[in-house]
Length: 323
Image (cartoon, helix red, strand yellow):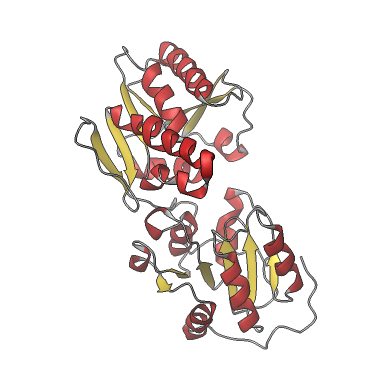
């Protein structure tokens, strides 16, 4: 949500301020609370599950419309639950109801199995298709959706960009991120097989004189343990969104080997490109339009890294303290 909100004013011509509707107890990032572009509007939503999420969102949207009389209400998170709430909450009101969805939202059921997969399929492709009942459907330019024949919604294809005011080549690097002065590789995302972290570790074993930093929450204990055993790999855990520009500034290359991304392009890829950094990604979707692409092969990744012209220093010492 942070990245989408941060870049929203750069994509919406003629609109400089936005209300953000959230639960009354949700802890918001400090930068959003301090940013004059955003006003946080809190309503009682709680922590419901299933269809109760829809009811809670509907009530919050109705209350917001009565309090603020907006021209438009747009769902930007959890399409399968929040979108129906926005649509029901704005029904009968003189307000434009908008939803936001990508193609991947209709394929999440593929990550489960058995009875759970059948339930997830119904949620993705029955409840989830309610997004097309909106007046406008916002979808990313890469990995977006098409309007089905039965929907009268207008399709708005949004450019996927990183906020240029935050991600740019002029940002100062954090000196403590890397030990080396060159051959520095950054990977951003959950520590999981889906995000291709196993390929990062394979490449690190093939390139002992390169330094690899992983930024993201741990999801696979085996991969975390394996990373800890490699002397040239360091896991920094989750990093605040506002600190990420300085991480990109510190690296030479972003390695983004995720196996599942909207249109093959991740948010970290866009942020690294905006920061004027080289990007290596798997050859999926439209990734080759903005990055150097490789197959699902650590050997190919290692060779691609070697081929990048980088000013080098002496190799990393064999003994290196873990961060």
